[in-house]
Length: 92
Image 1: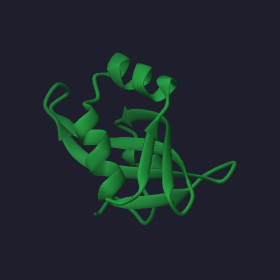
Image 2: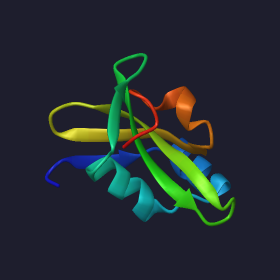
Image 3: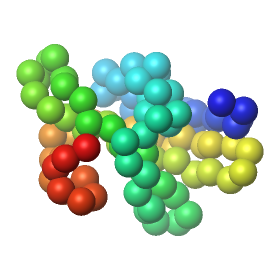
């Protein structure tokens, strides 16, 4: 990836608090299953995965701002409410 990436202190704090590995965040940024437009010129990059802790399917959502040469990670969280956020149904 030739794009510069900045992970805000808020995003780092939330990732740590929520038990989300930095490597998982980076892989979602590089290869999201979906890219969803959001408010204030932001995007949500999201990926479905099997969470071993809850023993079920979850959705990682990475909120970013981006331009041609930089991605700024604003926040991250995981949710079990896949149907609420997944565009186009439940299939990948």
